[in-house]
Image (tube, rainbow, N blue to C red; front, side, top):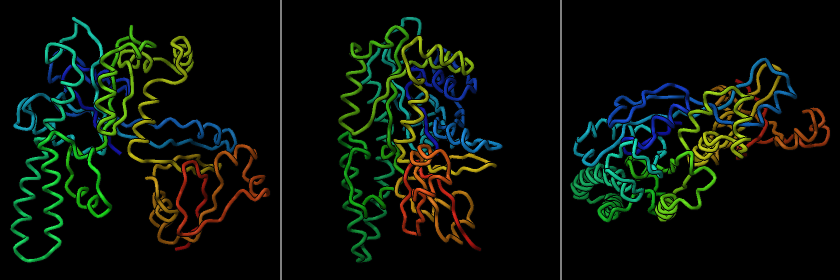
Amino acid sequence: MRLGIVGLPNVGKSTLFNAITKAGAECANYPFCTIEPNVGIVAVPDERLEKLAEMYKPEKVTPTTIEFVDIAGLVKGASKGEGLGNKFLSHIREVDAIVHVVRCFEDSNIVHVEGSIGPKRDIETINLELIFADLEVMERRIDRTKKMLKSGDKKFQIELDLYEKIRDSLEKGIPVRALKFNEEEKKLVDQLFLLTSKPVLYAANISEDDLGNEDNNPYIAELRSIAEAEGSEVMVICAKIEEEIAQLDEDERKAFLEELGMSESGLDRLIKASYKLLGLISFLTAGPTEVRAWTITQGTKAPQAAGKIHSDFERGFIRAEIVAYDDLIACGSYNVAKEKGLVRSEGKDYVMKDGDVTLFRFNV
């Protein structure tokens, strides 16, 4: 799964990306420092893997991963090609969700492209460019559908009504993700690959001085009210501190976090929140060879989950032997869990749950 980190120039996108991936993306105090998107693949933090590793003593432990793409700063006119805009918009089109970094601190040493801090204005600048790009798509789709309607097929009238509803909302500045659709409409909308339909997580980037004092930051309050109106989430993070934390080894990191009064880094929270934003869960496999987490979407059935491991597992699926992670840990071993009747045999219609420790039986 790919998440695009977007925002205006100089809001802390590349600093945050460096912290996430330790990839050393170029970071400087001038617009368009990032032109080609930097990509980093990071592990999704999962304490359950450590516990299972203690139990099974495997040869290796493999967490599930998520991909972050650092997309260059958008500016007004991007949808018309300003500031390499078309290129940037195409990069956004390729991601599954958006992490929108919004600057929520004053600093005279860091230039703001608009000359002042203003979360509402900054968000509108980005949203409007995405909306303009989507409007172009919808106008073309409406014209095409009107021509097809002449065939007399009623399905084109249903499509046209939906497309006009989306266009009218976009013209009012409402992103597609804020609209409600039934199941059939949602299938049609998914085929449009609209930029404003992508789920968004707002990352409020604060200064080191504001850590622990977020409730008194007026910019965060402003950002939260915007996010609430469109059904998005806000996560407060200090990109500069996170970049420093990322340079430390495990012991130093723990000590530093304790000093800051934090139980986990902002990055761990961001990665988990992004995972949740995409509607993802993990099932687990465990044995002496490997303990591993596998990413699936909520609602995935057992055979399709098996297919994540290997297509043969799905094709020849017989059953899944499953024990809930908490039950397994409480029992201390798989055999004890089995003796207590906590290992279940599930068939093709079983919907996987987060933390299912699973052994698939198959025959091809």
